Length: 163
Image (tube, rainbow, N blue to C red; front, side, top):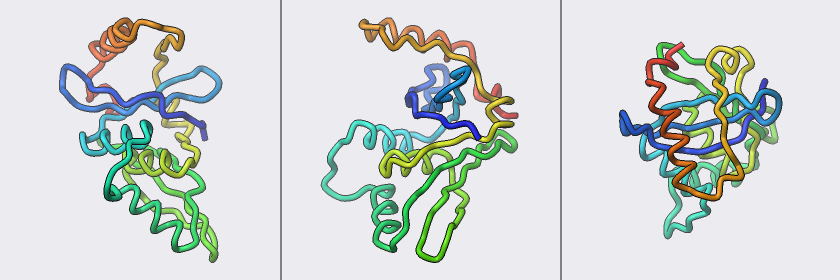
């Protein structure tokens, strides 16, 4: 397994679709782009930005349910892609042992961000679908950073990641 960090949630300008960018924590720093839905992108962005909401969102509710039932989210793993659809799993620790639950990557990441759980990508999936993207962490001009990312997005299509 390759540990990744949530690098960003952006919008692909050509399709107006949010894309989740999971970047390898070490090594080549490959990035796994996964196209996701707008509500899930918003849920992830809210968690990252620590936006206070008056009522719990679905992912907040699930995190609370897991906690109240005595469990913890120990890890999230993006496992594979099948016919253009990515699959993930939640790895829970409970009083009675470990539980693995199939989930969408977007929901899994939204939950991991809220709980602080590590995120992983299967080695074979990262080898097959990971791309090297040069992110300049020292870019002071946000417009320049956005333009860099737009150039990357202009060069890809959703079907490029269909496996």
